[in-house]
Image (cartoon, rainbow, N blue to C red; front, side, top):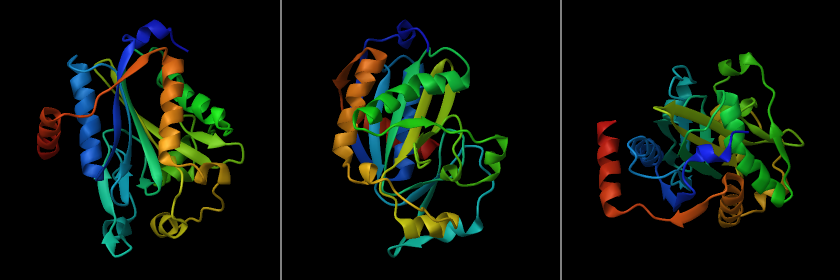
Amino acid sequence: MGDRSNYLSTVWRLIPPIEATGAIQMSIDRWLLHQHILGHIPPTLRFYTWSRPTISLGYHQRHYPEHWRSLVWQDSPVDLVKRPTGGRGVLHQGDLTYALIGSSFVGKRVEVYQQICQFLIDGWRSINVDLGYGTAGKGYIHNPNCFGTATSADLVCADDYKLIGSAQLIKSGAILQHGSMRLNPDIELFKQVFGETITHIPSAISQLNHAQIVDVLTNSAQKHFQIEFEVEPLNDREWSEIKQYLIDT
């Protein structure tokens, strides 16, 4: 673990949960990282959901099943969006996503993952869900399904259910780490996308609502990073910049 002083600010921004399309959510995350690099905003945490089912592709993911381009669920197309971070395809439906933007985390990439993921581990433990890191080897990259394997950057339950898949982008000394918490996936849609079956969803997870989880993880982040949060929604000017950022990117 790095020295807590390296997290720079003792007051972080907390953006209230936002539901939006995948394209908008990814633009918000890219914009927040850019603004933090410029020194315009402090370290920031937010949680969000996806307004319609979406597959997010890792930034360098060039190969994925052709049928993903024409998926339909409940008479609506399943969106495809590119993440600014690496990794493989993630189906966003029935999940809750977190994004953390900050600076000066020290150590190798896996160590930075662990510095950040600890607030997730501590928070889930407080509601009696124990998580550990995955152990997948290098061959995982050939699986287009992020939740098909669990690497040292992912968090799994004691029964090997992969709950959280995370990805990072480090740029100019700043970091964006965001990840999907798989809470209530639709089993049939998941099979349609990945050709795999979810054998079980732990009841301790599926019975929780998003507001409970956000509250628990927000409190855990405050304790872990030894900071205070200032709740600050995106304002009109920021939304205008984010929408322009969506057009430009």
